[in-house]
Amino acid sequence: MSSIEQIPAAMTWHLRQQVMYPDLDPEAVKLADDDEGIHFGLFDQNRLISVISTFQKEEELQLRKFATLNEFQGQGYGKQLFEYALDFAQSKPIKRIWMNARTNVSALYERYGFQKTEQTFFKDGYDFVVMEVYL
Image 1 (cartoon, rainbow, N blue to C red):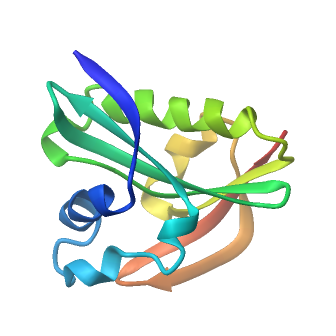
Image 2 (image 1 turned 45 degrees about the horizontal axis):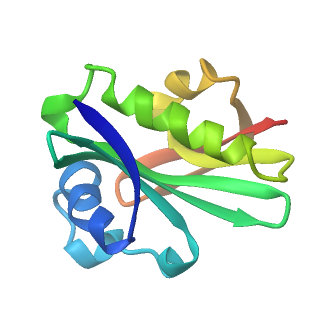
């Protein structure tokens, strides 16, 4: 049985590094503003298997560092956590939700109404596109 809980930033770091940047130093996944974010973890039988972080600035909320352990991908856990984060975002007084999405998975976010912007960049070996949805 799975559950979603708000967690401290430090609980996200190992999973972020393991899934997103396995070849980088663990310090590379720590965000300068992690202490300002609200972080969620999805647990399966008390094991943390998926994380996502949210950062609100005025009327915008950014989703960051969404990661699910490889062996649990494709089983609906990430979808469950992402939808939870979207519900959380929509409960806030915001007008826009946005993220830096890896271009190879941008179609996933389009299913949730996110649109690609013209903003793209390359970082840590990956191509990204800024995606957004207005509420």
